[in-house]
Image 1 (cartoon, rainbow, N blue to C red):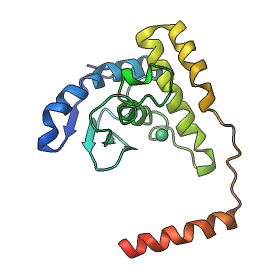
Image 2: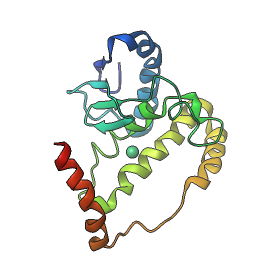
Image 3: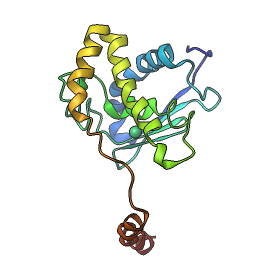
Image 4: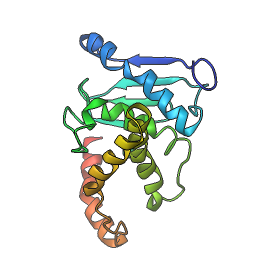
Length: 176
Ligand SMILES: [Zn+2]
């Protein structure tokens, strides 16, 4: 039971990964509780919440997390945050689920504002730490995670972007 009543959880995995998925996805309920505590009701009760195994790392979709993190905690088993805390949860489950609020429910109209999706979703990790381990630990996690912030300019010269994208587009067409 969540903030808006019963939320259907559905998982689609390869048969050979069924047992690992049952174990790994146990963390979903508590994670959703934590996110609902901070952000309000999960935005897509009518659609349910789903995880679908895919052959790549992961991606957010409305009510549907693409999952390819190998059924291990952290980011493919490593602590992306380098704080010692990142392996307490499955990065892909947490990150892509955070996008249900920031990215899928609130969506920027301009890709230049992608920071709205990614920054709040990244911050959701921090709030997860606070929910489960307390404020002090959350601040520690935040400070240890600071070296990940690069503050690089995100603006790209459109001509340079198009030139660099052309080979990729050509490859995509060749594959399709
Ligand atoms: Zn993201």
